[in-house]
Amino acid sequence: MKEFIYYDFDVFDDFDCDTAFLLGMIFTDGSLYEYSNTGKQFIRIINKNKYLIENCRDILKSNLEIHYVKEREYNGIKQGGFYYLHISNEDIIDELIEFGMCEKKNSNIKFPYLPDELYPHFIRGLWAGSGSIALSKNAIASAFSSCSFEFILDLEKQLNKIGLTKRNINTNKHTKTENFYIKYSVNDTKKLYDYIYKNVTPLTIYKLHQEKLFSFFEEKIVKNPINEMKSIKLPKRKMIRK
Image (cartoon, rainbow, N blue to C red):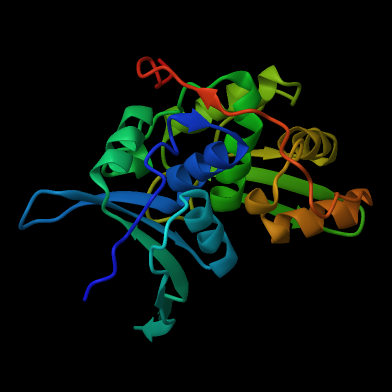
């Protein structure tokens, strides 16, 4: 007998820190597809870190199976080696589409409109999916990347709004598809760290980035921080930033 799959169907109605992080993860590590035989849509969230996929499932309050694709080599190129969730619930997919999720999202996705207090958690989700840190003995640099110029432009505007230095949008010429990125040095990385790790919750921490940031800035995070932020009921309209 097939196991009944359950979700928290209101997860994107009553927004909190965890939900905003999940949205950021889906906007970077998630993809929207369509079954060719039925036309129904589904979403896959993919990441090489199993605990991040487990955290996404926990935020959804779901019993979804976590799948694993083994790493293999094809024509000298390594592929696979990642975990994923397969979400086919129409209500959740419809909610995500209202926020701006779309097929072929890499170049078409839009930066969503959210209350200001939710952006640190949304951006922390983006950070877990497409952020990077370069760390050396005396320097640290951080970066975000996206195949959508409009998305990375609005992200840069949001980070500039909260105090990070205005940055140019760069093009990565070493990727097969067009890819854009913004890069920050030591002082701005510290501001970014202070911004996105405020009121962090146990389900919304990317351990690799956290460890690098903390080791460089010699700061300590509370092991089990408490999320004191109440959930926010979002309007159904004007969710996509114009």
